[in-house]
Amino acid sequence: GLVLVLAEDQTEHRRVEAVRRDFVANISHELKTPVGALSLLAETVQDASDDPEAVRRFTDRMQTEASRLTALIQDLITLSRIQGAEPMAEPTRVDLGAVVDEALDAVRMPADANGIELVGSGAEGITVLGDEGLLGTALRNLIANAVSYSPKDTRVAVSVAVTRSTVDISVADQGIGIPQQDLERIFERFYRVDAARSRATGGTGLGLAIVKHIMTHHRGEVTVWSKEGSGSTFTLRLPRPDDRGLDAARN
Ligand code: ADP
Image (cartoon, rainbow, N blue to C red; front, side, top):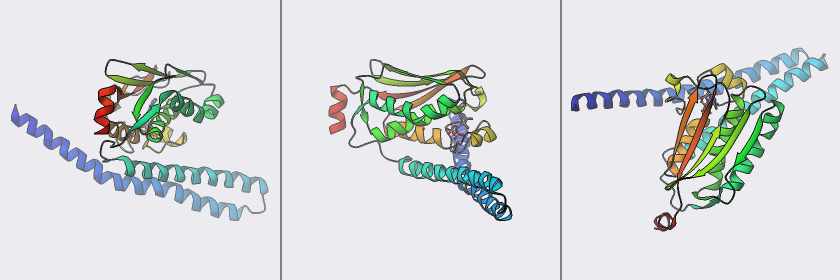
């Protein structure tokens, strides 16, 4: 009844508030970790200055920490630009064939290093309305996750399907999967199923939040299916650009 709905509303409101409050605390923590590591490593390098081999090892780790910091700052910038943005005013035609190819190219090195096969299908000749850069970011984030959370010798498949009213871009992996109880929270900023694993693979914890906001900005959505131990499929669902859609987009 109504009372129940209100109670649920309040709970939801309180949850959103808590998430918001946590966000600043999370950012501070996420920034402090690499900065702290960098300063420790700098000290260690100074102490080890007569051992070139050790200097090399520590400066390599400094590079890794610096990259982590750069990735985090980049993701924060992307997120702050896109979250709460109005639905796009002037979408342009985007060739999904090119977007999929570029996104796959971007992860080819880590995929090869881990014996993960990348396959793309169905994108050629398909166009959607949107922002090419943002759609590329969304797809790259999903493919990078698919590679990060998959064991060796598996496959990551990107496929595009056109339905009556939507264009669906799916990224399917044969990876570790996501526990059912975590599924609805993974799109929250900094929510991770396994924080240690996420950091080890260079994850910022912001990738899926960025994907979600990019899809909202496109009047689309992102959905997920997953089974622990067998894999995950994330789907970007965009409105299909028929002529009516084009006119609406121009108005
Ligand atoms: P991260 O930088 O930690 O990967 P994301 O926002 O991209 O942050 O993802 C949030 C969490 O969702 C990850 O930490 C991971 O636990 C889980 N996740 C995302 N994609 C996958 C996937 N393809 N397979 C298994 N787990 C995933």
